[in-house]
Image 1: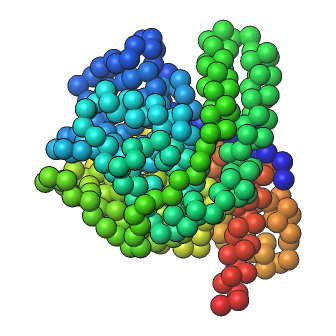
Image 2: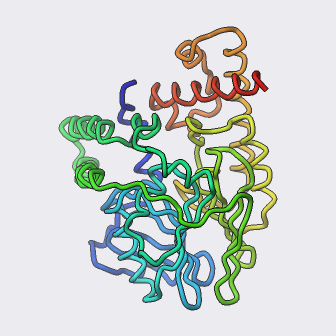
Length: 358
């Protein structure tokens, strides 16, 4: 299987990023009363001490994070894609507060959310679902998702495509943006060499709570979807949730997923009372209509694959027959790469075989 093409992979890095910091790379710039920007991160305060962390584009973080500053300590949700990106996150958190990072929560095992675990403080507790620990204790660097999307080989293909785009660009502004992406990607490829997958040290099955002072932070496994161990981080008093890759403003990746169960899991996500939905990628969400669109998309996708499977089509034939009409703006990642579609459809074929054998 070949590494994914440029446009599919660009989403991995762009959806976790905000626009570059246009005021220059000062260590700290307060853009408003509720937003703080460092050289590498932008923190949007959603409630007292609760920050949604995105990227300035200087470094590939590949996914968003949540930072919860409590009375005496800090809880972080997701550690980004490399030790390099995680170090920058920790440096940026030090701009927000001098309080120590006591907890790190992994929403799931994928490389773009958990491969920064290794640089968190030795006395910090890393929390995740039991399945997340299991996957990170195996050899996640050999898995199909990492090899096709996140590996050095895949990133090198992306870098070559990026260089071609720079050379072909006649727009100075667009060229400058591409040059910044190139610099970040070159740094990222080097950073991949030091990744040591590091599993959670504390696990749970269905739910647990972290209490710090008067704040309650609920960690909820509401069902299988993007993976078998997805965790939603819910702050009921603050009416904020961080959904990892169960929900973000785009079609979820299904190469390790449970597309048949995913809509029901999202129904349980929908039941949580919130004002802010922070996803693992993309912009902050406030409207639960995105949940309904995700559910409709997942049912459409599963139904088509189920029919292809029943009629005896191969995975490649099923991919060719897929119709994403009405979701062209939603399934950008999938439509950007045949290899991603093959991973997803192949996983759904596996799932259909599992269901048939039970």
